[in-house]
Image (tube, rainbow over all chains, first blue to last red; front, side):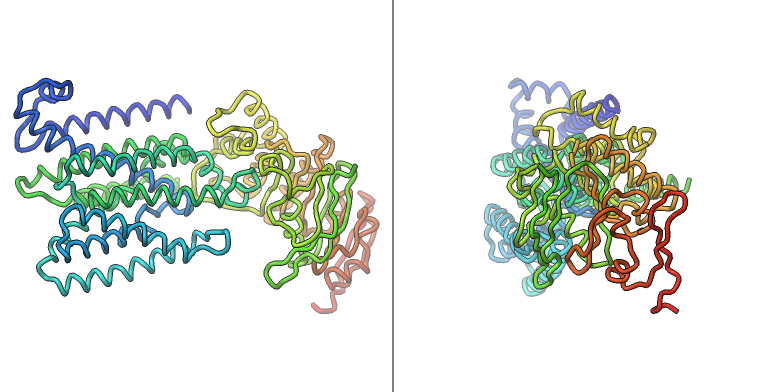
Length: 329
Length: 262
C-alpha cells in the first residue's frame, strides 16, 4: 500500500514536469527543450530569454501555484465540510472576489487595484460568513455552508446590477470572472506565490488531524485534537490561499473541485498522501489547461476557466459513471 | 481509590437541565450499564465523564484526578469513547481508522511505531476485525463498523471505555457478540460504561447498572438490585413482570400488561 502510494506520487511529479516543459515550449514561437534548459541555467540567446523569462515563465509559475493552491484548499474544504462536492469557492470567496474586482473595473483602477480589491473583498466575505456561522466558541459547518450560498447569491445579484449599469466594462468583468493568466508578470508572483506556498505547507501540517475530523468531530475531540482550533486554522489558511489565487488569476472553476476528488479516487482519503498528490496534480492540470487556453485559438486567448470546465466536467462524469458501475457489482 | 468518582454532577443545555446532581463511585474494573428512558440524560452523563462536555457544577474524578483539569491528550490516553453509529462518506480502511486511536500517542510529525502497530493489531484481533483491516469502513455493515470503532477506542489503550448505544442498531447475533467483547475487556482492567436500551441483555451482561430518570440516578447496583418491577415502572412508566431467567439466573422482564398499549 505504502509503496503504491509513493509510486503515484512519483508519477504525479513526472506528469508535472512534463506539463511544465510542454507549456514552456509551445506558443507563437516554438521553443525546443534545449533552449528551455539553456535559459534556465542562464545561457541561451536573448530572444529565447525574453520570451521565456518575461512571458512564459511567470505565467507558468502562477498557473502551477494557483492549481496547487486551489487543489489543496479544495481537499481541505471537502474534508472539513465532510462533503466531497465542496470546493474552495463554496463559502463565497469567489463571489466576494468577483464583487471586489467588479468595483475596481468599474472605477477603472487598473491591474493592481483590481487584484487588491479582489483579495480584500474575498477575505471580507469569508469573514462575514464566518461570523454568521459562529456560535459561541463553535463554528457550525452546515450553517457556514448555507451562509456562504446566501452571501454568494447576494453578491452575484449586485455584480449583475453593476454590469447592467456599466455596459462598457461588462465584457471586462465577464472575462475576469472566467479566469486567466494573460496579465501575469513577475510582480504578481512575488505576492501570491509566497502566500500560496506557505499556506499549503501549513495546511499539510494538519493533514492527520483532518483525517480524524473527517470521521467525526466528536471523536476527534475524544482523541485529544482541539477540533475548533484546527477548523479555524484550516478555514483561515484555506481562505488566504484561495483569495491569493483568485486575485491573480480570476475565478478558475472546477480545479478545486475535481482535482481533489479525482485524487481521492486514485490514492484514497488519507490526507497525508492525498494533499501532496492533489497539489501536484492540480499544478500540472492548470498549467496544461492554461497552455491550451493560449494556444488552441491563437492569437485569440480563451479564458482558462472554460478549458478547466470543458476538460474537467466530462472526465468527472466518466469517473462517476465508472464508480456507479463498480458499486452495482 | 475509586476508578471513577462522579460528584454532584449538574449539566444544562441552555435552559434545559439534563443532569441534576449525579453521584456514584466505581471501585473496580467491571461492566456498567446505563439504562433509562429517552432524554433521561444517559448520553449527557457519558459525555461529561469523557470530559467532552463541561458540567455547570460538580466534578468527575478518574483515579483521583479531575477529568476537566487533564490535558486533552492525557485524557485521550485514559478514556476511550465510542459514539453512536456514525457514517462518513470517505474511504478509510478499517486499519487506518483503528490507527487513528493512536493519535494521542503521536507527536505531530511522528510516524507510527512498532508499538502503535502492535497495539492496533491487538485491538483488532480482540474485536474480531483483523480480517476486515483492508476493507473501507464506509463499505462495512453496521455490526462490523461498530466493532471497528470499538477497536479504535481500544487502540487508545484506555482504562475507561465509554460507549453510547453500542448495540442499538445491530441484529441479535452482533448484539451478543459486541456485549461479549465488552465483557471480556473488564478482565483486561478496563472499566466499561455502555448506554443500553435492552434491559434483558443488560441484566445478563452487566455487573452494575445505573438507572436514570430526568437527569438523576434513581437506582444503582447489581442487576438483581436494580431490575425490579417498581424501578421499571418508575423509570419507563411501564408495568413489567420481573421473573428469573432460568438459564442465566438473572432478572428477566416481561412486558405483558402495558396499560397504555392495551
